[in-house]
Image: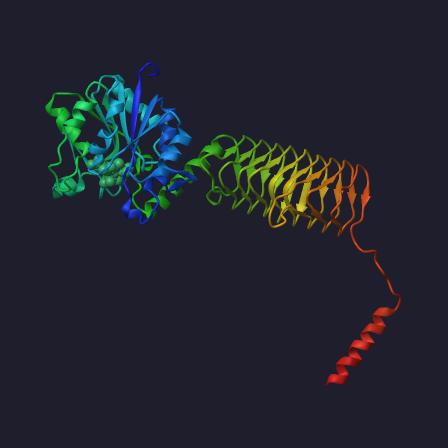
Length: 451
Ligand code: UD1
Ligand code: CA
């Protein structure tokens, strides 16, 4: 397989009118990654060495995404949307140089796996000229039907062109087709638009290949993998399937999920074997959790790196740029942003730690706030190792606490605290003996005078 060259053409020019959105359809996200990104990842994993993406004329965001995810891919603009064959031919310059396998895949089929794509390529390697990936649809409405006669794929019939009898067929076209490089261009160019929608249907390649006596093969994939997204309802259903896949994957990989259906992952979430996740946790993009760490219930993590043995939550929020070294503890109602915690450092209750570094074994008391923003600029708070910040302290950045510093509770710290120093940033307490009784007597007298 690896010795065969492969060009993949990703069709993504459709507007996705049924999504009722200004965003091009393939930019709608599954697991925090645009649908087309999932397709590109699968193609890469399946060994496609060249990728061409067909976009619409007004989709700069899509081209930008492709450049970011796959700099080697090229984009071709389909100026008029005249159907899937017309779209594929928009990448004609890519088809001009010789290649063994040509895959056509839709940008709105995000759950297809590299294994399934490899399966299509394997058929080409075994001598097929045209391979169609089909699936058994629970509800075939809207899909092209694979018409099989004597075990051979003879044609694909689109919903609008199908007879009532053909509409009863449940074996459907996923949209993923493999062409032998030798015939790809010539088959695509032979396709006309004599059909109900006056579009150039790529699916007509099947009948043309048969007329030419080429070998046409249908392979079956799963409906979950091949579902195409046309509406937001389908997008939501696909998201659920994606989440189930991720949950299964992390558990098979050695992590414990106490209530899998309540945990939500992103496409790039990395949980190392031995991690535990409690109920109702959300992993937004960019999170890694190391072995033996526990993410407790109702926590939200994004762009965070959680080291071995850490405990996060319940009810914690880790925002981008959070890095926790081993055995750090972030407790309930603590928000951390762009901050590092050294090994064994703790912020157990009700704190905001942003644009900061907290040294190893330091303890951040309940209600501590780093004041990192003055309305114009962000400033850093640097806290050394083995220091102690008393409850309800306010650290006004930029500010530094040296190793072993001790900040008394309720302090407002505006100046640096040097190594091993004790800082008080609050008014000295005053106690007036017996004054509480005298105050009450006076207040009662004022109230009685009013009534
Ligand atoms: C298509 C297939 C159908 C299959 C179904 C699977 C054809 C004719 N029909 O139907 O057999 O069962 O997908 O989901 O191929 N696109 C362009 N330019 C165009 C038209 C489409 O780039 O001019 C792109 C779209 O962005 C989309 C893909 O091609 O990614 C499929 O187009 P869509 O309109 O969604 O086709 P379906 O009607 O779903
Ligand atoms: Ca579609």
